[in-house]
Length: 445
Image (cartoon, rainbow, N blue to C red; front, side, top):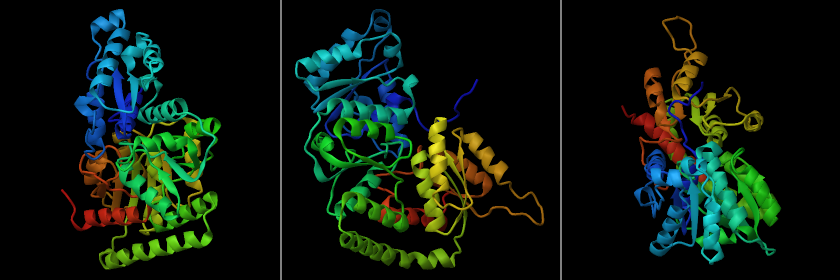
């Protein structure tokens, strides 16, 4: 028997809800037992740096809230009632019914119910998102497929400047809003257009325009790639899988390759890179004294999801000059997904680190200690100190026991509020540097 101790994601329903709640004009309708929708939305909110519930989130999520009666006799009619009342009371442009374990196990015909509304011209779709379909990351992909590959119509017209951005997962990438906004800023700097979908500046028109994009960028080696492949088959839009750029070196490379793929003139991308570097280092040089004079040279361990593992380890090594010891990936991954990440990690140029796959909090702590033992009084001992852990709130106790510094950069992040903070790009690189050094000059107890 195996179990996950203090998991860093929930079920597919939770992942779908986190993504729906960030999509403009899209309303969730939860068809499952009482309490699931509110509890999962609350977990997403607090774990993502107190992200909040938003419109029709948290305790306001429309739900069928089935009880013993529906479990015995079926919940189709109860779902029909809930859809009707939601359409009457809540403004939206698309209504997405997402299911939980109980309604899936009793065999409710959710799609049949929603088809009746679709036949009447109502924008209602159904997605199957019980826990046995996968975790929250899988729920994100299920939602993308349901809307972009299922609901949206095909179009032959393409906008050669339009780029869709996928792979940055609401809530489970706690900095998703800031990261998406910085990526969009960089794309627009090249004279292109960006659909990020999940940021406050977007509308449902961005969602509807997705099939006309010339390129999809997937900032994940494992989440969203299968979806992007189906998107290409349905809508004819090619996709590019890459890592999230963090800091100037990675962002320079990202913009250079994007310009080649989007056929942006070299002089334009050079002008953007030169200008962004001038701004970045104009700020950075002002902080160099405290960083160098304080001798902030650290060993680093990262504990993140698969999307942040390579970008943060590369940033710590290339931008800070730190020695990265280990990069823990906390997603529950299949073997082929692990192989994909291992291959990318091997090509990333990170010198000393190992890529490790572990989810349990105590197992991560034991692994850090086993692989990097503490000094127990030996005269000659490489103590791997000072140590900095870039992880989640769950690593705080581990850091305290090791006398290490710690910064919460992954889900769950209970010990900080995240509004529009992001670590992607040039501005994100400065934010990350600011947060890391800030935690060192004014450590919290």
